[in-house]
Image (cartoon, rainbow, N blue to C red; front, side):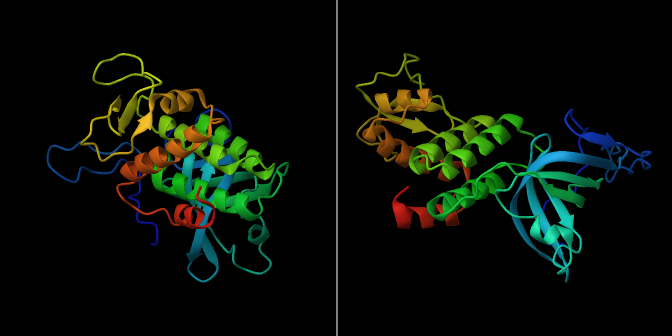
Length: 278
């Protein structure tokens, strides 16, 4: 199967979508001495879940595998059976950056899409905003684990798409989303306090940011991006009005994201760098 993630049990459904759970299947036997048996696998059906298409690719002759970002289940992989057929209802619905109401079922990480309906209410992304949207989707696909719910990040994603669609400055919008993504996934470094002295960051001093620990005073031997303390404090306040903060935060976030991606390239990021230096 094209999806290489290991199958896992479906998590218990949180509030926010109708869920039905048929009888549990028998527990799997232990695969090695000393290991406990896996808990019973339950078939779970979710209906009316808010979500967006992040990415899709062909599966067999007429179907698609679709990466979805949902409010209450996080990033979910589904098989959209028959979605490539000319008369399929799903064919025109499974579009990126369009709010959807999703219904799916399954007992493993790769579910079966039952239905998807367009909700509406958002302007389409065009030109540079469209490229920025694909960049957001690539970040989510590469940095979010499957079935790890992030309702606050989902709301931030919706807000970011709306800001891009209404012509808000892409560099500022992207920096805010990148920072929110690192916070929500638990890897955001502390930018407001020095990890060496524990003192608040001095706006006039130079700092580097250790991706695993946080900010510390810069030294001549540093090869990491050096930024002013004011830039770090501005980022904590989400104040990007200063052009210097915009420039330094761009370099810093590029460095931090590269670290957490393990060096994996971001294709859309490179396109944006080449076209607009975002």
